[in-house]
Length: 294
Picture (cartoon, rainbow, N blue to C red):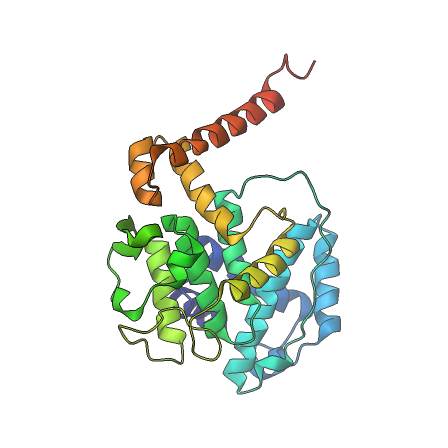
């Protein structure tokens, strides 16, 4: 059973190695705690009380609200897969809400937060292809620095994917951006899962009824996920593009290259990220320097 689950995460959903490891560990822990028969049918029949007992026990181990939200997401995804394997309706999987997360000081979207946000968004919809779609778009924003409008304007002629992608930005200007393996795998997973034929001159990312995916649908999904993870309101789809730029700059990317990747008409638009990075460094200094704490 665990082997089948691992293959599904790796080959069907194409989740990251970190996510596969975390979700597989959660599945093993859940089966061991509840002593559920290693069969898909009984597992698919787990109810709210079963899930609550498990999460309550995990909280005894010091699990934070944000970590509890991630664990709940992993369990729900596992139970949806169990229902699918057992030939039952995935809609019957308990739709539990995670714990409320206390709002903290606004912070930048870290790489782990970006991946966690994309993974949690993918686990919420009842239809797997919609979750795969939302995850692919969010990883594209973070991994390649696209504007949300640029990502959603892509058509089927972007396929098959290589290690680069040509996008059309503001003023109908085209640029080429890199595609990380993680991003490519996420888009490929969506392409394999979608019920729609992706023709060259039709939208790549489809809405539930087959039209072009709207920004509002994706933004609502992100709101639900960021609340579950305890991320600030500033953690929006567009913030993933800003995080892409800030992280590249912190890693040593020069402004001219960053300008090209972001599709900025002027270098002045790109220079704002030097201020963002300086603010981050100042926060680190204030929190870490021994004299600052006196």
